[in-house]
Image 1: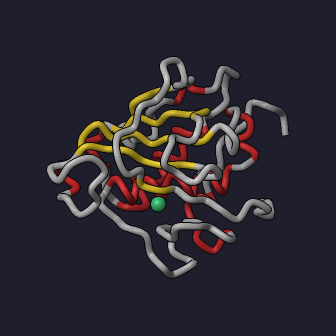
Image 2: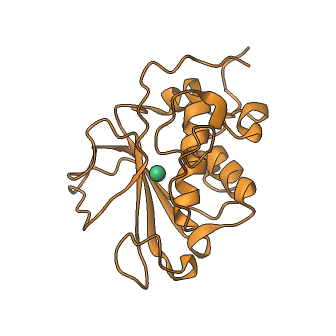
Length: 185
Ligand SMILES: [Zn+2]
């Protein structure tokens, strides 16, 4: 296991306040995940490889022992940071709820239209998701937490910390389960 040093300390993973309008065509990859290990297995064009995004989503579901949004979570990759977020945000979520858009105080069972956005600067390619696996997995777990109604936690080692400054927040399952690569090792 190799942990890359986090040179970019900011992982905003914010809840977007207000309406989100993604430019047409900005969504390079979309798939629905049900939190199961078989979801979205074919995201990587390389035969035999395992989608790091799908694996991270499966780990995140197991971490929380719950699947948000009735299993309907859309994960969008290679996204531009939406207006209203810090420009160095790496990931974010949007959803509708009984309390209005992106209201974490509303009952999580009311969340619909759940979308996790992954920024294109941090993860421009599937290969970058694999090489930056630890942060991807932490981030996915964090965003699943939001979609289950979790708010930010001030404890720096919490997976719900607003900013990750090191890997102390990383769930153990992210460390022990890593995406298979199609490349010979
Ligand atoms: Zn967050």
